[in-house]
Image (spheres, rainbow, N blue to C red):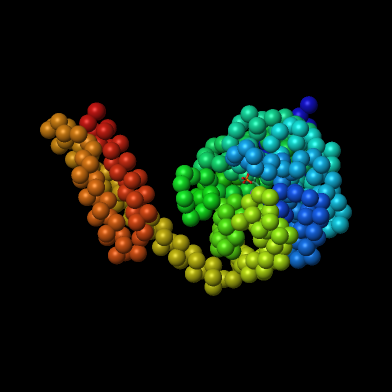
Length: 362
Ligand code: PEP
Ligand code: MN
């Protein structure tokens, strides 16, 4: 029987107890000594609220280290005893859930390769029915907010009350700046859809390289994330998985020390008044932009009528190229990036085509 309705959670979410919630630990549990040394050094920093370690590792290619398996779970139990910190483990199958629950693992998380697959999410969800363990859901590998939301819904349906999200970036083809593109607008959309859920950032898997961690972690703090999941290892370069992105517990402490966690708001009247005035200006400017866009669409419709009368195609590749080139050039002078101009003009152009299409086929 389902012990709780599939509606919004009722009790306070323990994942919201600390802000920032910092979950740290090795990508993979490798040996008992490695787990215990890393976790004790992390606890000594006094800046970590929860420990993590991968026990089963979903690897892209065969032949890589696929995790130590169930025999690593007692090492985490020991780490918890020695540090007093709760432990979190990734689960991808019903058997993983069963083993973690048998060892009293405090928090479970779904990895990106699990969230992407509704069969796997459903299998894990079924194993969690009626179980009171908090679960964190990483974003799927691909930038699909519906899959990410779907995993939240599947877990809520079986009565998992304490949920949270982890943003670990999205994979793409070829060499890119980040191992996984952050695409910040996706976690922002998830915050809009699920404002009650804590959201952590995992800069380790976004970055792929430890040098990029501080900038990404600060960006997450500035976007009002609730915490971080970061990989740390007693000897990062010797790690059996994800070596380039791991840091020592001491380097992690320095990184966390340098982070600025800003408040979401304040009751200082001077600040609130200035902010309200500036927001009012933004609203006026947005209204003007919308009115201009509406005018632009009316002109596009006029063009559509001429094209219809003269039997001319809507899409004119030469003209479209000219619009983009003009926009990028003007934008550069106005301090607007080429990427933004491309995205903006793409959206305007698509809407224009829809309007012209309607005119032509009415
Ligand atoms: C991990 O946390 O080590 C991991 C495998 O992450 P992801 O699911 O984000 O790839
Ligand atoms: Mn990893």
